Amino acid sequence: MLDTPAFDLEFATAADIAAAVKSGRISTQSVVEAALARIRNRDPLLNSFTAVTEKRALARARAIDEARAEGKKLGPLAGVPFAVKNLFDVAGLSTLAGSKINRDLPPAARDATLIEKLEAADAILVGALNMGEYAYDFTGENVHDGPSRNPHDLNRITGGSSGGSGAAVGGGLVPFALGSDTNGSIRVPSSLCGTLGLKPTYGRLSRARTFPFVTSLDHLGPLARNTRDLALAYDAMQGFDLDDPVCADRAVEPVTPHLDESIDGLRIAVASGYFKCKTAEALTAVDRVAVALGADRDIEIPQAERARSAAFIITASEGASLHLDRLRKRAADYDPAVRDRLIAGTMTPASLVVKAQKFRRWYRDQILKLFAEVDVILAPATPCTAPLIGQDMFEFGEAKMPVRANLGIYTQPFSFIGLPVVAVPVPLDPLPIAVQIITAPWREDVALRIAHTLETKGVVAAPRPSF
Amino acid sequence: MKRKSSRKPKAARAKRPVRLSQKKSTMAKPPKADNIAALVAANAQALGLNIKPEWREGVIFNLGLIMRIAALVDEFALPDDAETAPIYRA
Image: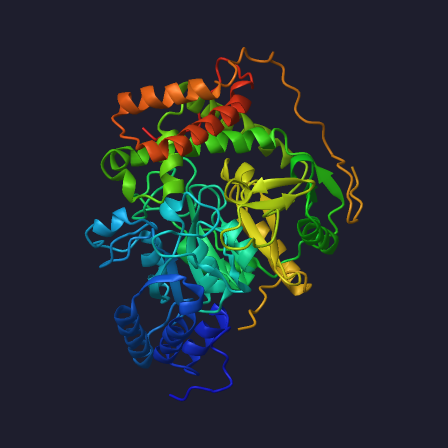
């Protein structure tokens, strides 16, 4: 088998890699070796990987090449390298979830369901990725492993908590990666690192064998550099899973075959009020997307600020409850910023938490009514482009706001009720910023078609870093 | 309402915000800083949490933040038959 030198493996799409592997144009082993070489050469700058599963990846690559040689049909992600946020169980590794404490856990006995599904589609896991401690983070900074670094400016944050996922995909180490999103942790790093990110409907993808944060709000999903790759990964991961009690018993609904369908007739509105952009970059990004789509109306999201508040309360209390025993025994081993928030969270009055959960249902009912009027809602993904590592405040209109607490102000009101969202990067100069495409529950297909249309029009693209 | 594409969009809207049919709830005011400190001390004892002196300020700050943000939820009057939104299948 001859590898064609012209094939640009560095920024090749997952779809192109799979096609090349299936056709015999390139071997899986060479794809994986190239990915491992990129990780070796570039990750000392990006600090996105916390473990590289080289031996396993090469063994899988050989098995796929042998299967092809035997004439077996390969899966839709044949030979495509991917990596996962280190809260996913990877057989043989302790599931760190960004922490020091979890390093004492025994190695996982079995992969997370989503890894199993991706490898059943012949994708190849190459490692585990850096993240904010226990996913309680919007920056991608980590006191134990160091910050993951933005591929478009190494002095800037990736956004979090799936910071390593944003850096690894945006920096061209892997075509796609998995992250988790409780309040925005896929969409925020997608925005700051210039990748696409899909947070599917709550309950759509199994969370089995991943380290939780706030089970009421936890989602898993992919980050990629183009819509088709996002869709291919998403399709491979769909399906009911008894091992996750939240996973919906719902038929697989493939979206990849529908990406090229027209978006004519879709009613598209821009979220106003609470979501009105207060920085030039967010405003420019939303405006470009709205113009490209012919979005001709604004729409008010009722009680969005209160929704964010309720998400904050549920996160504080449920996250704290998860960690209560560890806080008693090993509080000194947490990132101080995370520890202080978790301890405070244990003291949240239960009556207010229940009220927040009741408000959640009320809010859901109001938002679902909006989808009788529109099919798609557009909103900024982050209030600003990537701040500097260690930066405490950012300018938000005429005010200054803390970075750590506020990067998710636009993402929380949607994940709070589990709506599907695709974050699409607008490649502004010098740094990208994303727009959220929000649809009704289970309509990931519509959001991805919109994203694909925007790519076709040249409005949305994952910028290639300059290093 | 039709949207004008511009760098300074008006805060126009297609729909009025939902008007609440209920009266505002009789919300308690968020506790003062001294009370938060007392709350932290009492809760730490009740929950068996050992808060080192150098952590105390951060915990008090964060619980104060939680209580201020929770006030936004607390002040929103919900009907008595409002259901929570957990995921559970019998």
